[in-house]
Length: 217
Length: 218
Figure (cartoon, each protein chain N blue to C red):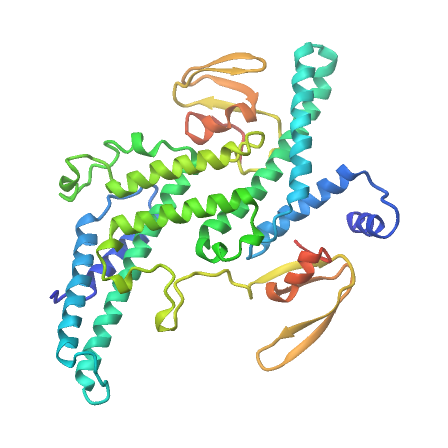
């Protein structure tokens, strides 16, 4: 039985809160998650233990002390559940957002986060800040998104959400992006060069950070 | 205000405007409504179908025109493409606003399939099963069975998050719609909704009028 009752859940919530303000997703707290789940199981076992002598005929008013203990156990389990759900939700929301933005999460994760405090060892030494479950989730969500997007090919659902003002925009190339085909011919996007191009052709590259839009507030 | 007059004319007398102008107006309105309303609005199947069909046509027109390489056509092309981009943006932003709501209140909208398009329904179901599997494999499967549910209402708190129906919205009245009840702290008041009025009201109070098209959100 953990003496630091409910502290683990709080830790998850603090981490989730912090995540909301961070540009990158911090490492998955697999140790804390495991410990919180363990706490729930311990609480449940204790609850069973408390209930056992009454064989189903427990009367709360005759045993207020035990009733109280049971209630506290029960509420703590529920609280831990909420904390865990909230923690995972914040992270999965963030991952979805990155999927929509077209970030290649699974490949760019490698080595992006060097702050793993030992909890990464359980994941076969990988540097990923995602749990294996999260990686699976991202893979499946990307498929789902691609399927939904595929129904709206004319629209390009993941395109820019800024109202289009001009058909053509000035962009500067931040990273080499190779050659792209436009209806006005091929453009070779080499670093530091500048182009006047059709916005629809380069939206994706702007989102992915290859290009920077100029004169844009 | 011209828009409103056109709208009235179109609905009362013979249509004074071509369908596409009305569709653009309807799409813009649906988009603004969807972005400001706290709840998901019914999916305008016909409207979206018509607009998508026209976008498809416009794309092929543009392809044809740019194929001819006629310098004279360039100016027209720019205008057509700009218009196309704007239409695409409207539909995109509209659909994304809906997806955002569906993602936030997944379980809630799973019980209201009539508000969604078939595609959105598919998306919602797949997404929901993804999330459940994710929670389950991450931690929930090791929980006591009684605590594994995601839509529990025990303890007087429902786990299913709902949109706030009482959120305030800015709205403009397009057609006289009679009186609306306003719940104050201690008493209930009534106000008359007259054409052209702009008010801040609870969403729950104007929801039906918006769905009828008598009131628009701004």
